Image (cartoon, rainbow, N blue to C red):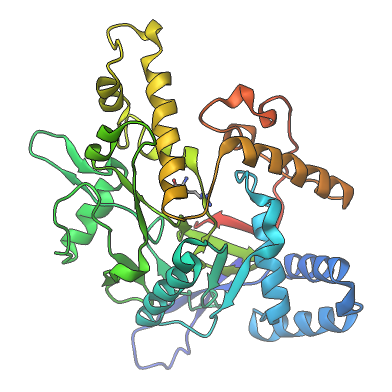
Length: 378
Ligand code: ARG
């Protein structure tokens, strides 16, 4: 991406200002248009479109994707996500084209609608909502939350945290901005914080019907329910920028469905998250005085059994790490057959529980950086 400084008209009555303009790298645009036409033979030869895009970039410093290019670009960004084990169904991503939405209020409404449509009463649909792109001299809106649904973390006087420790800073920030919604509980859904333009960000509480949650129970241990654990049904990442052909969509929340281990072996288990293994182990009556009893491992398995069972019981889509590992290998085989490399980061692909008993553990992967992609904001 090229940037340059341009001064405003010198006779401008306001103080002399400078603008930083971001224009599109035409080579990235070209590369994407060629890819689109290569993989979508129905769209015909790329020449006309390439000329049009080159003209728009030289005139306006940017160009606009057709709805078909946007849909394809978003799907390929998923296909290129080297940390995601769940890419087998990349073609089925639903793309909500909301590029005309630029205001914070508009973004809030779209995020809520996204959650309702993606949740679909539990039959979760992989969905992305694409809001206004960055334009030269005018950045698009942004959601500051890491995910649309996350739980607050409240730091106590004694240093301990009630809720999700990962979001202590974010919770402090929204409270400082005037959020009063939290009950101080372990699973208080955080408000959305949306930045559009230069003003103060907008805070917006998610309506209850947009947030499906699952209480965690165990198929054999009635006491499990009393731990009071729950998790939200939809993981919707909202702080990554969707980059297609040199264009950046900074606000493009997307979701799939959960793999149980993300909740059972990370969110509820990590020592710096909900840290539930000692609690579960105590209830199971395990010997926690020595590591060699493998109490952590035992508790981890029961917690993961509970998560999978609970989502199933609630009728909410969820996959397990064994099934998903098999599917990922199917995906790799399909990609290879299509003549493509599938980038994969071993340390993210291998599940955080029972890694070695899943087939994804026992091999290496190519890992080139491909575009379109979901990228971290600069
Ligand atoms: N691991 C993250 C979480 O626990 C979600 C990442 C995306 N996961 C997904 N299944 N699409 O919330």
